[in-house]
Length: 159
Length: 325
Image (tube, rainbow over all chains, first blue to last red; front, side, top):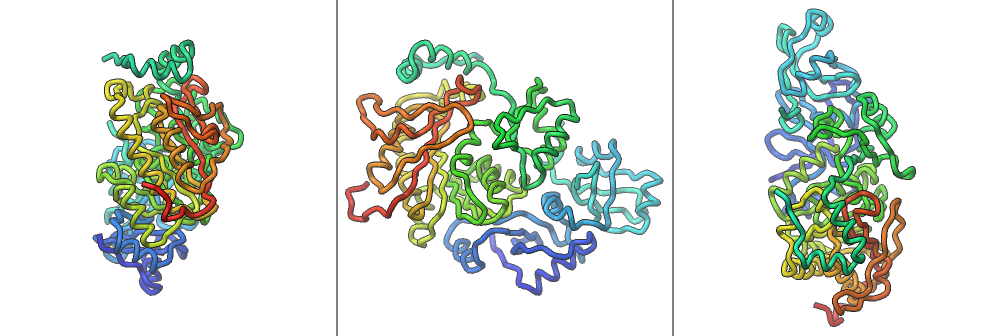
């Protein structure tokens, strides 16, 4: 796997792409690892050390899968959301208890009439929260009737 | 299907702990271990997790006051129930047997340190270490099998571990590469592949696979792995050698080999549960008395799996010209 460590300018751009959630800063090293996937590394190795180890060893991954760049936005992973939970203040869709059950089954969520009104000004990717927990990223349909579910398979309830 | 220990296995356990205790050992091997979990403090505090689980009607016991993240679920749960909760899906806790938490408790990795986890999959101990290091410093988590790496990587993601590089190498080869690079570590965990005598309660199939030839082969591999890893330890650094087996060939014999060939000190370990000291002679082989400082965890002592661990401190570099193979 080829990696590219994001320089200051690219990192700034990445942060802009998650600003729709209210995120303004984080101090991790960001690494692009192909297919628009961005990983974050919080460890102590320098950029040179990382590159040297990457070149000489079979490194399968570094840090945490943080998000995927899609169009002008970045779709954060649920685990990244947990680390940034104190900063995520905007574009949050709250699920009801029964919707949470459907969410963890991997189903798209039909929003209630009340939710459609509440979230009428939101569009595109949103942070999904249920009973106080961030449970992943969703995408609102244009008419706000449907919330698409991006919870990865391995994080869903298995029947 | 009912699995039974081979007579030779029974004889060896009897030789280790006596006839009466061996009977208890094989009786408890028929009973599952309690459901234990470890709170992932990178995501949630033990207090909050406990409250949430109790709100589900679970009875949670925190058996060790100094380690509130370790919890036992005292209810009789449905099969698979531990893995189906929202808290588990979100990585708020990790299902882990208590004895498997001991190596990292003994190693006590600190924020900012460099840690090598040589045989890391499935990631129980790597995730535990990352939490103790508060996602700082660096962990190199290695394994040599692609399937096992995938499980390791998935568990690291789920636990929001961010300070780790996952490598795929044979352990000895990885150590050679790092040695060449002069990369050294503050702490190392060698949780070596083993015959698994301590895990009979969850893997009774171990009875079928158990044989002396395999033990001898594993012992040779373990000595190579542990000695290669020791080369990477900083002077003053600490290494835990551990296995989930109780056979001295894979445990004290390996530690004895390290003590003889390296400038190291075997250190006492303070564990939050009952342990017994290492054995000093076995099948005609005499080990250094220092080996007594190793810890043997028997299933009947704490209602856990069986385990072995030993802490080794490096006092100086080995003389490259010494008679060492």
